[in-house]
Each structure stands twice: as C-alpha cells, then as structure tokens.
Length: 326
Ligand SMILES: N=C(N)NCCCC(=O)O
Ligand SMILES: [Zn+2]
Ligand SMILES: [Zn+2]
Image (cartoon, rainbow, N blue to C red; front, side, top):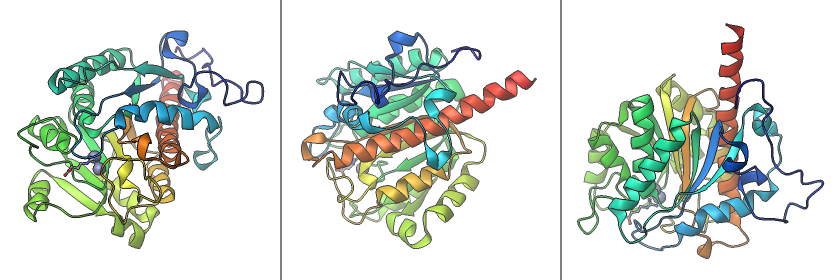
C-alpha cells in the first residue's frame, strides 16, 4: 500500500452479520483482493513435528473463526490497526504433512516471498516447528533478530527420536544457525517438568533468559514488560507465542499442556507493554482445536494476534509519517 491509499478494512459487522461468510482473520480482505499488504496474516497448517497430542494443523482456521468478533478499534493501544496499515489474510501455506524437511523448506520459501513484498508476517500455526523456517526468512531480511518466546516449554531441546526439526527443538536450531541475536533472547511463561537440570544449563549457554510463569505472577505484567523492553532495545524483534504459555484453564486446546501458566490477561498486558519495540514479524502457534472448549483457546489466540498486529500497524504508520516529514 502506498502512503496515500486508504487501507481496505474488515467487513462491517453492523451490515453483514459477523458469523456470515468464509472466515478470514478479523474479517479482513484476502491478500489477493488488495494486492500487497503491510501485514500479511498467514496460516501454516502443519503439525507433523509434535511430540504428544496432534491437531495444531487446524489451529489457523480455528483462530480465524474465533477472530470474527474482533472489532476495528483497539482501546488498549488506542489504535485502529486496520486503518493505520493494510492488514490482509494471505491464506495458508500448503505444506507436506509427510515430509518435515520439505515442509520446513516450503515455509521458508513462502515467507521469503511474502517478506520480499515488504510485508511483516503474522503467522498462525501449526505447531512450533514452523518458527524455525520463519526465523530463517526473517533473519535473511533483518540479520540476527531478538527473540521473545512465550511458552511453557524451552523448545531448545536437541532432537526427538533423532529428528532435528520438531516442535521441541526450533530455537536450538536457530541458535546453531546464527539467526538469533544472542544478546536478546528471552523465554516467558516457562514452567513444568524438564528432562534434567542440563536442559536449563544448555538453554542458558545459548543465551536465553527466563521469565517463569511464577515470575509473571509475582512481579506483574508491567514490570516484566519493562525488563523485556530494556533487554530488547531497538533491535529487530521476532515474537513467537506458543499458546501453551497460558494456563490450561485459559488455553485447554493445545498439544502439550502444563499446569500453572499465565492468564490471558497477563499475556495481553505484557504484549501491550512492548508496543514500542521494533516488531518485524510474529507467530501464534500450537492451538489444537480438538482439545478446545467453547473456543476458549482460539479466542485467546485471536486476541493475541490482534495485539501483535496492532503493534506492527502502529509502527508501520509511524514510520510512514516520519518518511513523509522528511
Ligand atoms: N512446543 C511445544 N508446545 N511443546 C514442546 C514439548 C516437547 C516435549 O514433548 O518435551
Ligand atoms: Zn509449549
Ligand atoms: Zn513451543
């Protein structure tokens, strides 16, 4: 979208009932209807990398369905994200469910194409395996990026059954490949049993800091966001959100649930506290609708993607304004 064009926004829910018609994220136009977008919301229906309950391949469409109720003005960030920038739904990346290596390559190539148009990505998973090819693509464009990883799990394990590409291993691979800025890596929401203490020492050696879910509860969302913001500074930032960072009460529909997690309010508040960070792309993964009830998980995921999209739209609009002033 050029600076003098008005973005095409969502279908007006006061004219067309919000439950009518096929679902796109937030009832936004499809990418092929607008040509190019500042933020492309894209689904990755892939869950061949999971170690326990499958079903995250249906996550993207469940989030789109739940997102029908999102409204165009975000009071928490005082912004109308779909008016500030063109946000559009780029549909799904068609990945091979029978060949993980090929799927990882396909995701990277599709992300390259979308980022090459100038769009930022708001990816809806899929299992956490997909973060690796997305990070590869983002790093080709921006260099090694800061990573904020919301998850019950570390996802820096080495291999499962000898497989390198799984939903428990994307961030170890990313560190090995040099695509992360190891001075600004954080897990948030970490909890639950590990294989051994070594998991933590390995993770620390890779450069990660940990904010556990209990830390969030004790210190509060604002203080946690302040600390994260200081660590990230103005580095290009990628945010990867495994919905199992939330307590199973807030996100039952996921493959590897762990008790004692964050509330959806805490997650949304931390994200809002990061609004000034240079968010270059993001994902929300691990929504497995078969284990969900009353769309609890997909509603939480849709609001999470909405906050992330709002952050990106605000930055795009601010950058455009700056460029015009020059
Ligand atoms: N990325 C997610 N959701 N889970 C990783 C858990 C890996 C394990 O089974 O130990
Ligand atoms: Zn997880
Ligand atoms: Zn994960």
